Image (tube, rainbow, N blue to C red; front, side, top):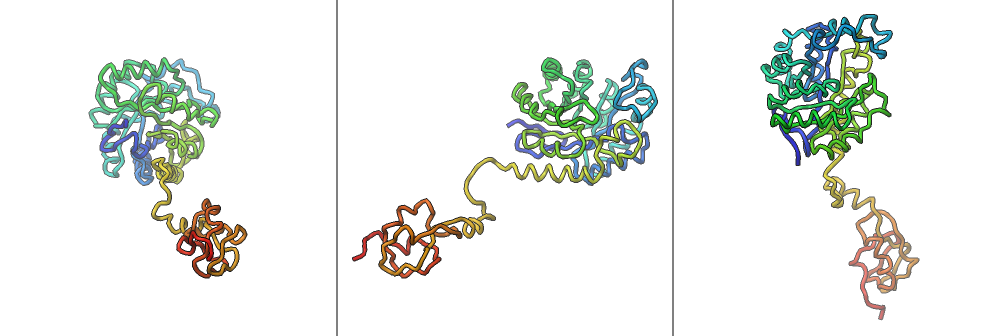
Amino acid sequence: MLKFRIGERWVGDGEPCFIVAEAGANHNRDLTMAKELIAVAAEAKADAVKFQTYSAETLYSKKTPKFSYLEGLTDKSTWDLIKEVELPREWQEELAEEAKKRGVLFMSTPFDHRAVDELDALGVPAFKIASFEIVDLPLVRHAASKGKPMIMSTGLANYEDIQDAFSTCREVGNEQVVLLQCASLYPAPPKRINLRAMETMRRAFGTLVGLSDHSLGIHISVAAPAIGACVIEKHYTLSRSLKGPDHPFAIEPAELRELVRQVREVEAALGDGRKLGPAPDELEMHQKARRSLVAACAIPKGTRLERDMVTIKRPGFGIKPKHLDLLVGRVAKQDIEEDTVLTCEMIRDSRPT
């Protein structure tokens, strides 16, 4: 079985799905709002709350064109927008303490080498590499060299991109990798999610897999553990009515709570795959609601049973229906009333004398 620890939490085969509440830039550069987001993640029982650590100066060229999905949301340039929503780095220690106080792991996606070092100093339990950064192999190498689990989103990536990043982690001795299937659209339509790619990546790279979900609603995230996701990342916000690039496709607090609840129920429903008959709490149904052989009419003692004397009905604590042909021709050892559930003690083998 493949698994490793993220903080004190085991992640992988046979373990509950590691749920990352992605706050991203939805703090709107408001420290109080950022702390409220942490409180929401903790209340929802997410495993981790994650922000993003970047600076416009090292992330985007000022000549970057505007993104079409943001049309109508802002008239700012891409660079100005990123500058407006970047996380003040001086907040990170305070946010990490807030998360610790509330019992949820603090994480943040690093977008530059300085961010990796800052977050490592804060003791983050894992590093998350965003889809667009998976081709920045020096950044991947620097993060992987810290020896912590690497969660890498694979939106837009082909096998070569994934192999390059995966091999880069292994080159510095880091085998603790989770590959997240991701559709890099905001929001992502269901037809672009491709959940089965998780199975493909697991087979191809022999590592853990999960989902970074940008779709609307929670249903696709809830489905992911059923086909092998051990990590789920989902953007959330205090309100989709807030202004900012990531609020419109994020889920709200009640939805985050419901996502966690439903994922845990799906995990419980998956079971161990074995078919061993009724569980202890199913025994009443097994006895009363299954079918067995029942007297179709009154059968006097000494009567040889004919086919039309026996029917198949519930309950199920009598002779099994599959033994009907064996019952015909045998003899009643006692008077049997109509509708009596037939048992072996009522029947004998010999012919009437």
